[in-house]
Length: 521
Image (cartoon, rainbow, N blue to C red; front, side, top):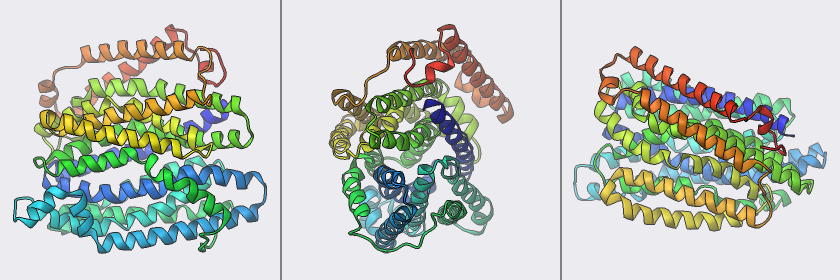
């Protein structure tokens, strides 16, 4: 079982790696074009709202509800029933998202006022941020249709994942990065406001991703004509599972939107600093957390359908081991090398040393919650695979209330850094409560040796972090180096860190078979 999961996980991780690398290139281009000023704040704001709704309608709640039901239909072996389910789900979901998209475009000013209240208040009173509100409203009209494209793209990806075609959906996001880079290079020179070019790139990226899925669905004979089916039994089951999951699976995104709203009251650059730190976390979160979650959900859904509780727990344990194995050194490495990473990736054009320093502060705060966010990606499927969407909702409510409390406690002494820290703290609460719930229900019991395995990972991570921290020069030296020199020095530190971590794991007795479910640690 775990050998197949490892293979699938490696495929998803490889495809995700390619996408994340292109995503970093995209962010480098954006930093060079916009820096961390007003234009960058506006673009990140206009891009965040449709991405938040994408998590609700597509990759988050819908995916968690759709995959278990799709697995049930597929297990029956009746291809026509599976095709019928896809037709009514795509037609119903597509119809709803079409309405939402049209409303979003028509009422972009209302959405901008709601989530950018600080800018809207200035607009009402002729303040200095009035222009930000007007431009953000315009850009949101351009970026919002991305929601329609990516929702149906995500549904197609869920179908492909259910059939074991993980690589396609994991590779698809690379097209968004390519179109945004192309827009920055070739469209922005023709516009007075370069951030508008990036908004156009988002729109085109959604379109290309949507069209890319078609040939692969056709290969599986799963390319169907959508039709409305609100009362279809499969749709009823999916929406019953999805409605509470809309909140539960998207708590972190809701927290980010709350942070964006509060950041609109802070000085120019606050939203951008939070964005750049968040984007660096997305690299390991996507490569490891999302990749493992992608392959583990169909596997858990099948174990639940087969009523195999023991193997269900073993699969959960494998996911947690893999997240900790990869997430702990990633979190420590980013925390220790946060300033060199920001310097090498973004310090060019409009992004200078001041922006590096400011973004590194929020990155350190955000990194403290990286492991928790990765664990959520593995723990939440333990509920959704069993078609339990209510428990994550209750936990999500607690997490969101905690985030609001942390925001109030941290924002005044720490400014925008407090917003990043509050998200990390609420994410940790979310992960802990998800884990405790699975343990109390007897759904997940750690395998023998798992705790010793985690202790070994912790020791290896601490020693690795201490070594690369000791070897790394101070920030002034990093800033003085030429880009090629700085890139080479950072690469050396990353290689040293990776080799050290691997060697320490071997010395501690960890071997490949410890990564398989059901083995001693």
